[in-house]
Length: 147
Image 1 (cartoon, rainbow, N blue to C red):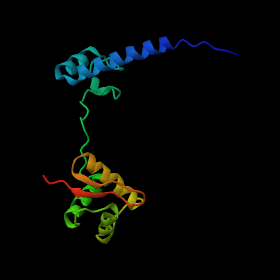
Image 2 (image 1 turned 120 degrees about the vertical axis):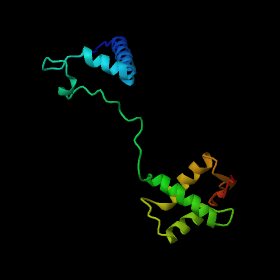
Image 3 (image 1 turned 180 degrees about the horizontal axis):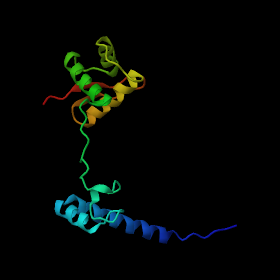
Image 4 (image 1 turned 180 degrees about the vertical axis):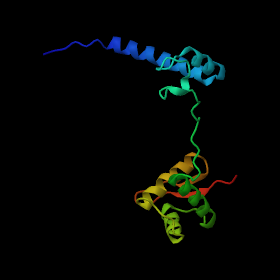
């Protein structure tokens, strides 16, 4: 059996819901808008007090969750930058791994993979510079960028 589905109606409904969501976010971002919306909406028990209804939250959501402790990746990046101070230039991923293992850094998976990923990230951020590209089985060599 062949069914013809008109996706344009679904797309139109999605666009309409997105417009409503954006408008509601804009109203809730403004303290006066939140207060006005609270005066307009009636809670399920019939009174105008929105604090009774757990489904309606007028408190602003935090813009960003702040972590007290850095992520494992950021901890590794900091450890690599510290290691780059101790290692002679240029240094490779194996040099970094051996120094971090010597300092008892705890890796969550294969150390070479983790260090390689973070080294490339630090190069992209401009904190490290590639001195020699990978040639066959010989790895890249890095140096710290001076501030």
